[in-house]
Length: 184
Image (cartoon, rainbow, N blue to C red; front, top):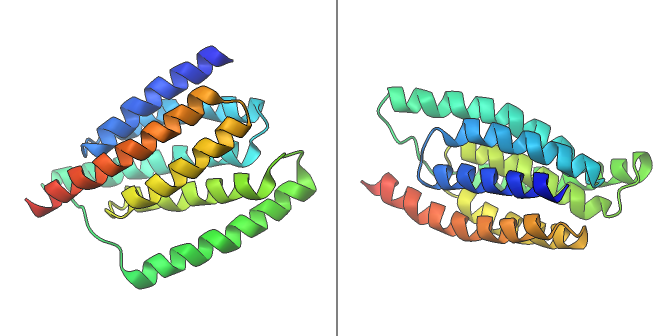
């Protein structure tokens, strides 16, 4: 299992590095990463995280198509999210995290249902923001990845926990990298 975790971690770093540099190839690399992590999370009973990987798979296809379209239009496509839309996203995060946590309590043997669900729902929403190229996605990733590292340390997935700390650092880099692209 540790070998799969290491492979998933390495592929994921490549995925995020490509995304921080606004490279469309982050999406197909991400497809491989989510397949590996989907298997791994299911094996460690992080069911919300497993379901999140299926969503990431769908979003990888969507993001890939959306980013390719912007390349064809010769546009970076990087924009900012409006405050009303961000408020809606926060409301959705809280509501769906609670509902998904309740579902995990009733229909699974999840050991940390609300934390697991909050991280998964956050991942859904922030991935959508990234696919739409809202620059604020990077600050959301900093918060989410930092919190996720705690969840993975709790599950004794130390490689993945450290990976998420690296992701948080890369997200800071991603923001400044995208900001530079956005202003040129």
